[in-house]
Image (cartoon, rainbow, N blue to C red; front, side, top):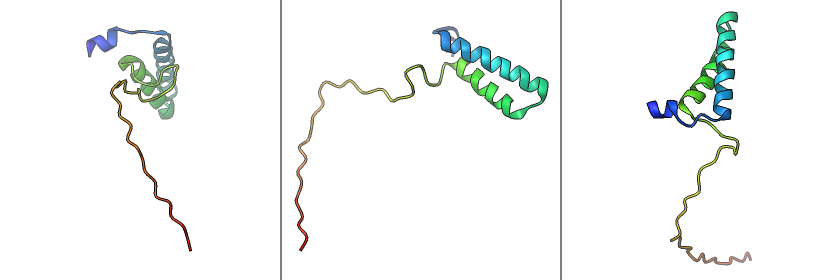
Length: 80
């Protein structure tokens, strides 16, 4: 857990931290719950390094070189 907080600080992670901190500060100052939720989410994303990056969200493609392709057979059906 400590390593995820101290490593891999990139530009977008710092921007999330700054914007989330500012939003949380303004939410406390203005007593605004919606902005507070947004600030908390952004701070959590920055601190725990979760969320989508510049390439967008996606599931990584498995890199199995031994992928077997099964032959699919189709049966043609005719209507009367």
